[in-house]
Image 1 (cartoon, rainbow, N blue to C red):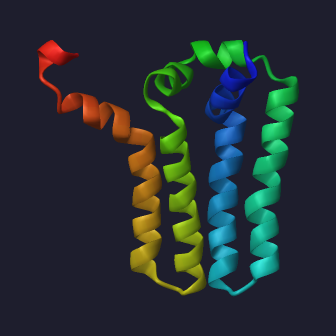
Image 2 (image 1 turned 30 degrees about the vertical axis):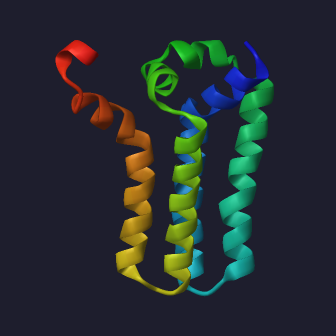
Length: 129
């Protein structure tokens, strides 16, 4: 497996997904309370450590063969990963400004990045699939 593949599939590992989600929400909570240094540590350090651990120690070939791995293979791309990260940044900024509306917008952007593939594909005619 190439480094590019490993970088793609490590995002599909269940532990990495869990750490990313929990860290994003915990950091948003801390940003809401105006605890910027703590929020940055909670939001950035655990996902980075989880990435390093998964990339170093996990057999990502098994992840590639899993349903989430197949989903990532088929639908996720670098622009969609960047979109998801942008959604988390919007969530954090919205939490800092205590805007529930924009927190929801950030979460919707992240959700869109993860479900865009099937949504886009469902809009195509059956012959194009």
